[in-house]
Length: 426
Figure 1 (spheres, helix red, strand yellow):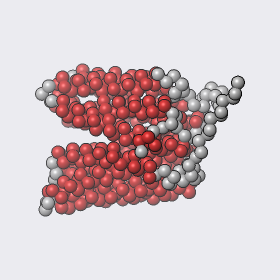
Figure 2 (cartoon, helix red, strand yellow):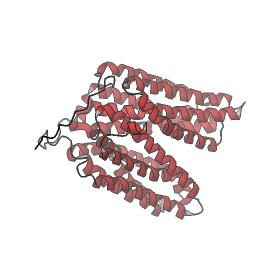
Figure 3 (cartoon, one colour):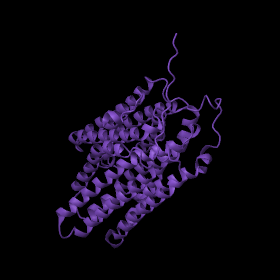
Figure 4 (tube, helix red, strand yellow):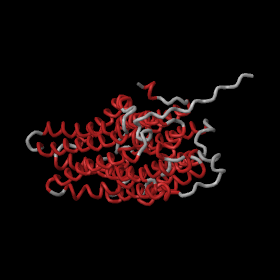
């Protein structure tokens, strides 16, 4: 299954290696930024929260600019500098000593990360054809989670709040990891250049984001993504953890086990899922994702119901919720970027991918803000009803998208790759 999921072109395989290596570095630091800022550097909880929120806001504001630059100059000229900036900012976290320096460093990191995800998706899309694209995006997501999981295990064995040097070490290692995909891109001089340069006579693409938003199928896909991620992904950090601890009354250690179960599910199931999804409707798969996410939240709701009577069952429900959610992610991760790039034109591919990545940024602001008040109402029952209902609404939006797509765009008919011309005999 691994061999089948690998892209045909060796350049794309090397890009995936860069994803894995950088993800290991990301996993070293991902769960510990808040702890580092508060317990090691002495920031208050409120100031640390503002610093992290500032990063998300800057990234969201700069993402559209990143998409425009990718279309105008090519992903290569945008992603490589962004990776270097990200590395410099991440390494500088080791030197943070105050709220002001934390804001400055997180601003640098946000500038770097604003275009990396959309740029790398654009590069992978140009190195694959539509028939293999969703397999490659699924493999990319599995490698990302595998790397984060490995990095988390390593850092969990190293860090010690009584020894700041341990945190400084993992941030330096994370910075080095961001340089690996940049070095790989530098060794591939023909990869990531401006896609439409030859066909457009080097003229800038017209229409910009207005043309992207006039694309009715993509506009419907954006609505689906906003509803699903607001009631899904955006609830993991705040809604899921708060409900599990306060309503289901499980310990934070159980929440950690649940997140581990999520990663294990993704790594083990991703290759099987992308094989099963070949030739099937992408919109149908997205509708199933909404139903799976809704089922995960219902299982978590059950944990809150049984919490007072059976702590073990409540803990198992919390872990099961996270694992079920991970199974839904294995369907979403190949389908969403594959459908985005099936709808995109070469002239605006960077903007399409930037808009797709902005969905997560917008929902990441809405989700945490709404989760707290909803969980505080009626012992969390209002929150459960809201997120389950939202996921099911997203499923209906996905089903309504199918009639706007061609069979090839929807993945029901596999596109035939263009054969390369045979070399002429001397």
